[in-house]
Image (cartoon, rainbow, N blue to C red; front, side):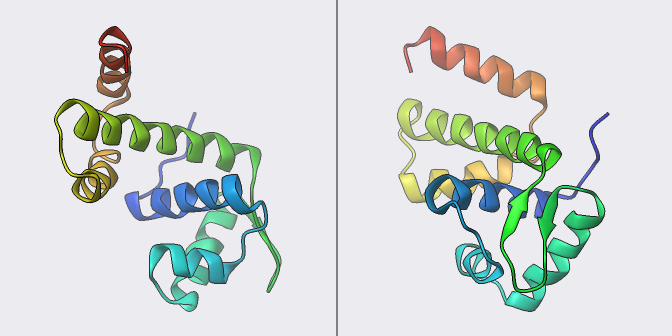
Length: 126
């Protein structure tokens, strides 16, 4: 059974996931810059994610997704990319707007709807 987390916490996991894909090493400062929020806010969120066993973090050290955190973050990232692709490539929404709207929609769409959207994109060759 998956642990329920807030959309805000999902955003943190997703940001760590994307940063790890490009940088490997992720620090609180990197996350604060990516999300445009303060380091104390990031630290509070990271402590909550640590309690739920989504991240590992030693004070002033690197952030690392746990196996559970990686699985959850990857799922969120896939949702985001799927929605953004649909909005940009199929509907012609500007990239900047599609990025913002994909971030909002990824938290509220059901897994079933996302799966159907993925299947539709495959059907139309995207």
